[in-house]
Amino acid sequence: MVASYELIDVRHEAGIDYVTLNRPNIRNAVNDAVIEELTHWADAAATDRHLRLAVLGGAGKTFCAGADLGWMSRTIDYEAEANLHDAWALARLFARLDTLPVPLAGRVHGAALGGGVGLVAVCDIAVATEDTVFGFTEVKLGIVPAVISPYAVAKIGASAARHLFLSGERFSARRAYELGLVHVITAPDGLDAGVTRTVHELLTAGPQAIAAAKTLIASVVDRQPATVTELTVGTIADLRVTPEAQEGMRAFLDKRPPSWVADESS
Image (cartoon, rainbow, N blue to C red; front, side, top):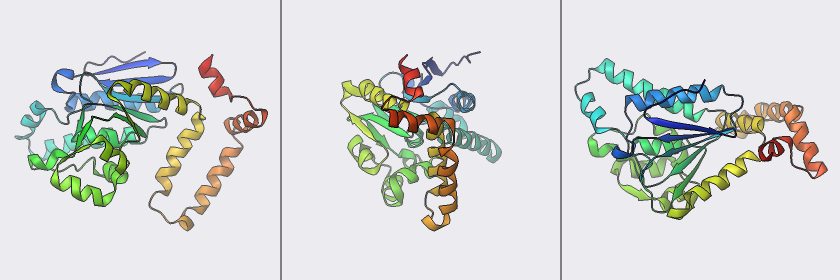
């Protein structure tokens, strides 16, 4: 049974979930209800054996402008326990998105501010239009990009984080690309084509190999090679004997597409 959502739109097509923040009248600002719906989708996606990848975007003119002002106004009167509840809910969402076993591609346009940049940071591959504006704007409100910081710093590095977290200044798509936050830049009218190319490339890779690659990256990041040798040796040895790897290598030697590519094009 396909779940029904009010604040996000989920369209399933040929093994791909197209997830769209659907509050264009307020620039897809996020509140606790949006967090709950995205988390529900991510939980389901993590166990969907037929899902190959997901694309996260925003309806209207903006990807995501950060937190909903109405939600923020309510939190002013929150006690510590309520603030902790909200923060943990947000943390669970970002953890779910970051650890999805399938690739998460970002379709980014207009603006990605505050928590919106956090959503970009947890995307495995982010495609953005050249006129998109980014900003860790939390300090302008007297707060900090705390929950999203592990994912953002992993993408842009500590030096850039010192600059952008502390100043809260907005920066261009070109700068986001230089920092590694964005991976593909397109013209404003070329976003969908850019996303389509990214999707096509991801669908040519083995699904199990992609999941293993995501786990591998998380396991070796910021660790010395000698400390992960046993892990990396075991990973490739285990994968080589899987049916997917056997099919992939045989297909390469036979000069034909592997079965997962053939299945997608049939």
